[in-house]
Length: 68
Image (cartoon, rainbow, N blue to C red; front, side):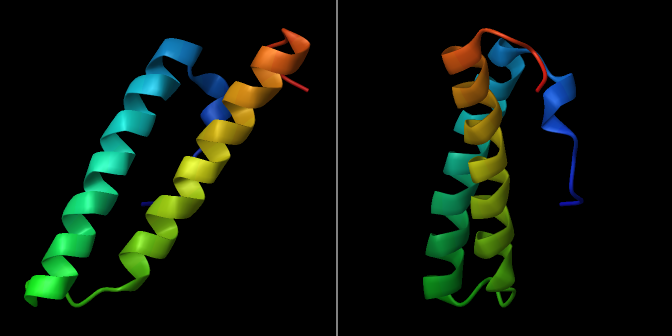
């Protein structure tokens, strides 16, 4: 997944995207263990996207602003 600007999304959209990414991480882990997936970097990139989303959500929760 290409790096995205998560600041452009609403908090509700980010929470939905967060759920999707976490489910995708679980699926990728299972696929790697089962030998169906060879790209182990996929999990690393998904985790980074999760961290980016959490950063945006926590900023909005703490400061009540949409952007820094």
